[in-house]
Length: 406
Ligand SMILES: C[S@@+](CC[C@H](N)C(=O)[O-])C[C@H]1O[C@@H](n2cnc3c(N)ncnc32)[C@H](O)[C@@H]1O
Image: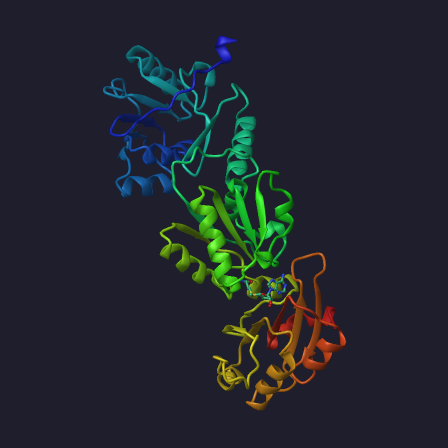
């Protein structure tokens, strides 16, 4: 039992001498953590890998180009032996033992007085795993724990010292796998989630029962505007000490009113974190096989809201300028006005046979794609019964993949 049982400890190496013998792949893997810990690293080796050499050049380690010699561990707190010279390793090990310096050996774990755990970090937590003689298992357990902490599947609530707080989380286009790792972790830590209709609704089912899920569309707004009512709900729950996540579709700052919410929270003195999301403007075309740019085809893509008709005086969009562009146009919230928008683009000079694809409910099991041209898209979308949410992609990039979809 005791032979295979190591006593775990966290070494605080800042400013303390650590000697590393050898500068091959093993040293290359170990050095970054020692550098991060602020150790005073003396590296002894006649040669080094290019990466280790770069660390020496950057002044992160002091490199002496020579072999080990007796006395090298003078003043050391910790040593790592990583050379493949068994004799030198044995001699170095003996010196470490005599000096009572903890010594790791990459060639012979049995002969070492210390073992390096498989380590990882996530959000201020260091995970270190020792399994005795099974380094692959250590690494696998470490990966599982770090991944779980990162994506929130390993529930480890913090004892919060922070006050009220709201996270504006971009949930991606709909597929629950397309939220960021940080977004998912914050969701797993939330007490209250205020969610939109769009975005990864499936993730809400995974939340533990104590989490209050509020449908943003159903917040009663009486004398307030809907957005103001949502802002107030965020502020009230945060002030009540809850960890609040505002889960939004796509990216919070792409037609997502994220900034209005961030401003309202700032005004109420509540700190907020914004977590970017994968916007439907790029990912939904991509999910339908359409790249928004392609070498030699489109050198730009422009994302436009189509919720206001081109002839509406409140429109902020210069459709004449957009019609002159050769690249890709991506329209969001444009299902209702697509006929009028296509006609305006053609009237201002974009070719009537420009390929168009309308992708409904992209990245979800209900995804479908309707192909047309600027001349026909209004009719086609109506005839096919296209409904929001849908992204409209206009431009030659559509033709790159349309053969399979017509
Ligand atoms: C209010 S905007 C929000 C956009 C979001 N912030 C983003 O970055 O994707 C809503 C519009 O996004 C588009 N959209 C969002 N998710 C979509 C999806 N899964 N499939 C197709 N369109 C989507 C539609 O055009 C929809 O009308």
